[in-house]
Length: 75
Image (cartoon, rainbow, N blue to C red; front, side, top):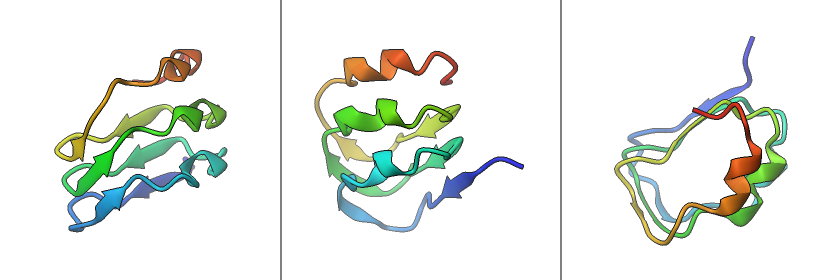
């Protein structure tokens, strides 16, 4: 069974939590369809088991961190 978090479409707002990278065993993260803003945390590469991340339909700005390139199996 995959370790999943899906809190899409929950009217969440503010910056993406800086503590996200601490969820190192997480394989699937869906934060889409909220109103998160700010940047994607650089340390997401600590989430070595992450296969899928969905941040679509938010107000996130900036570039995708180069550290995500380390996650070779991400979709």
